[in-house]
Image (tube, helix red, strand yellow):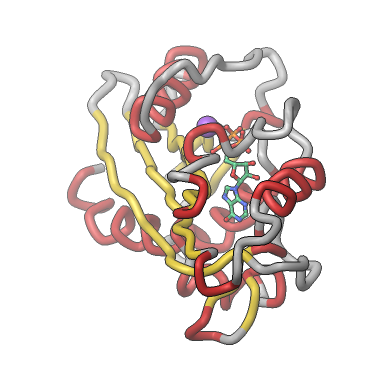
Length: 195
Ligand code: ITT
Ligand code: NA
């Protein structure tokens, strides 16, 4: 089995490689298809954006494709950055995004910094038949970053049950509890039947 992951994000790709290895599913990513240009994420929801990515890549490759659209929803910011998480501070720059979140939350006490990480996955066959699953992780936005693992907003995201930020966890630990890990688990449960 071989799936193309419709992502340019190396952090996501590494997590999927680990998650899918258990099922002996081989994955490639958009790095292996440099001819596929930027896909415009013009949707208004995670599912619409994941579907746009999946459709564009299955058209180009004629292979089954998995697309991931994710984001961080911060309660004190009315759910922002949400679907705008990747380019919140302008271009896709993790450090700038994190700095923007911290400055917008300046003065907001820890107990009011609750947030949810969300992932929607769309698995699509070349006939455009799709399977949609999602996963959430609840936590809090730290006052200062902690940890060096993971990617994106991980250093800012505190998981109370684990008493660690996502960036203080190993890849395996993060996959066990994360939004992407939970969504992938659902996907893998129905994968054989759907395939
Ligand atoms: P692709 O569209 O190519 O997959 P992207 O990074 O643009 O890559 P999204 O549109 O889903 O992906 O944007 C999600 C944003 O949220 C992006 O800034 C990520 O760095 C961040 N993000 C997603 N999952 C994350 C996670 O598990 N931990 C930390 N940050 C995450
Ligand atoms: Na997106």
